[in-house]
Amino acid sequence: MIRTIILLLFFIIFFILTTPLLIIEWFIGKKDPKKARLRTAARVKWGLTVATKLAGIKLTVKGVENVPTDRGILFVGNHQSFFDIIATYSTLPVATGFVAKQSIAKVPFLSTYMRRIRCLFLNRENLKEGAKTILQAAEYVKDGTAIFIYPEGTRNKSKDETALLPFHGGSFKIAQKSKCPIVPVAITGTAEVFENHMPFVKAHAVTIEYGTPLSYAEMEPEVRKNVGEYYQNLIGEMVKKNHDEAENK
Image (cartoon, rainbow, N blue to C red; front, side):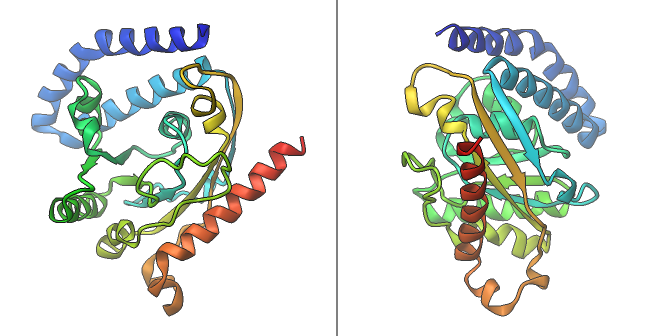
């Protein structure tokens, strides 16, 4: 209970105290959009790093040296918790925008911050609008932005964190159209921070592993043809390995 209250208070104070900075960065963005975005992203990373510590998350990060930092990339990962973004963002070596569900676009302050760092809101009910979002994400990547998407399409509510939902192939169109590397990300342990005992936040170990980047041009034809299934299996293996390691500690 105490952790939950502390986290809520932290986010409320964070949004109140940093709103003036959003206004300043809006003016900066008129002349230098990239500078404004990177300033905002750095503050978001700081805030989510603090939130990760306040939640009592004990992070283990693997393979971050695999992440290219000199160009736009696409992160693809499994999704099991609201804390996936909080924990992951604190470990990202590059400013990153997430593809989130459309309903979050209506949340005050949070949606403003998300738009400033090039997050996108995906309408899963409207295929035409969803395609536009994917195309916009590809344009952001071409411009040098890192984008993170959960190809499962929604949060996996299974009690077995090693059982991933099917990966939607459409998520990978971002990499196909932008010709960027895909970095697989395996997240384990976040459901134990919150979802498995809502509404309370509890301290728990979380492992985030970044895999080897691979672009469409480097893929074997069979992989390219079944890219969703390939990454579902790859990330599933990473999740299981890290889950088993945590269980055996």
